[in-house]
Image 1: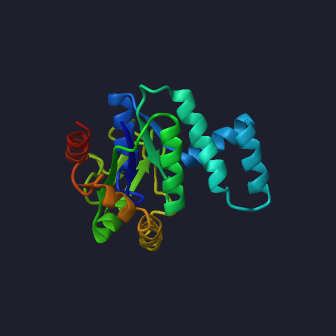
Image 2 (image 1 turned 120 degrees about the vertical axis):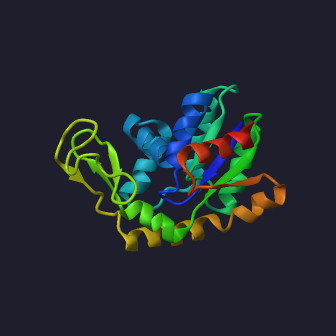
Image 3 (image 1 turned 90 degrees about the vertical axis):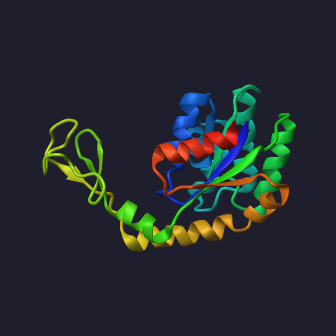
Length: 214
């Protein structure tokens, strides 16, 4: 099974991907993570990418395609792939089709986690974590049982991500719409787009994704 998981930051892609990896043995192919790993490992593709980035330029579709091609070759045919952050343009979508075909694979589903922008702003801007153990909390939905004390480790220090603010969240939403708008009609025409309510509880979203894949 090969899928693209779409959704803006905060929609829960990471959470759902992690569960698919754990429960179904799939592999999450995040182009950002793969790029950093290739540069660190100084692979052939990594060195090409490093040279481009050091010049302050954007990594080309050709380099990204080479990364994905190498990852699929290393995975083996029995492992399903979750594409995260790629493709973002029609040209990349066409390139992905060719890469998958070269490995006797095809794209099965494009799953979009749909969100309500105002609700997503509320979800993200209210979240904070324990500075010691990373346990997650929310101003509205999940406060510590004892005010100022982490339920998990007892620490009294908490932190918030500096970019968890309304302006940043709405900017991300606009970027997401701009980046995904070109590819969704392409996959809609093939009849492989499925949509799940990303604002539902995590387990409900998981059930929605499972229902598509099963």
